Image (tube, rainbow, N blue to C red; front, side):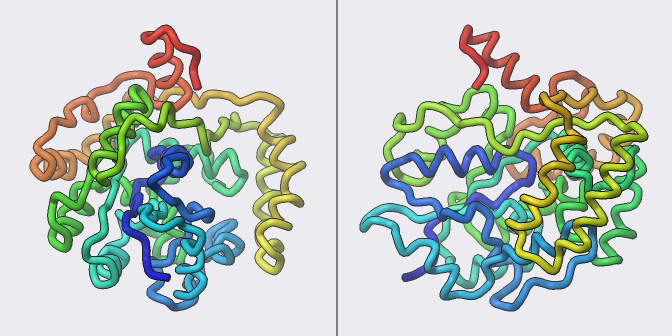
Length: 327
C-alpha cells in the first residue's frame, strides 16, 4: 500500500490538530483517520515504556507495525496525496532520519509557534487534564531534564520542543529545503485561508478549496485550588490504573473527574508574567537567531512581551479585525 506523500511534523500545541482536520477536507488530499500515529518515532519496534502521568495509556495508541500503518492509507482514492500528522517528528531527530530513509521525496510541513507561548500552552494543557502535578509553570520547566531522565514522554519537554532552529537545522541536512514548508502559527490563526493555500501550493494541489481551519484541541484553564488539587490527584491515580485498560475506556472513566475539575465553561489561561516570559525568552534567544538564519525571516516579536498568546484570544482578535465571528 505504500507510505504517505507528506507529513505535518510539528510542533505540538501549534495548531496541527486543526490543520490536519482542515487538510482532510481537500478533495486532492487523504489524511489518516488516526491523526497522530507516531509510526516513525519507534522504527517498527513497540513504543518505549514511558513513566509520566498518563503516558502508559497514550503509548497504547501508537501505530508502530508497518502493515497497520500502511493500512491507514488504504482508503485513499487513486491520484490523491496521502498524509499524516505527528507533531513530534520535528523534534525527534531519529524520527527525521527514519523519514529520510523511508520517504526521501516526502513533503514536510512544520508549524512553529512562539516557543514561550507553546511551552505555556503545553503546560496548561497537561495541567487542565489533571496530569501535571506542578502548579507553577516555571517550576515545571525546571523539572524537564529530571523528568526526561526518568522516562517521561515527549510531551513533557516544554522547552526542548520549542527549539525549532536546532530541529530544522537537522531536518534540512537530510531533506532539500524545497521539501520543507515552515508556517508560523500566528498565520494559521490570523489568516487561515492564506495559510492553507500556501500549504496547497507547496503540495501542488488546487488552492482555494478550504475555507477555514476549525478550532480543535483547544484546552481550558483550571485555576489552582484545594478542590482542583484533589481532583487532579484522583486523575493521576486513575491514569496509573488506566495503563491496564484500553485508552477509550480510561477516557470514559475519567470524564466525570475532568468535567468537575474544568467546570462548565472554558476559561482562558492568564497571561504569562512578563518576568517569567523574559526568563524563557533568554533561554530561547540563540535558537531563535538560528531559526531566523535558516528561514530568512524575522522572529523579533517572539523576543518581546505582548498579550494575546492564547488561541482563543488571537482568534477573537483576528475575527474582530475582519468583522467575522470567531471560528
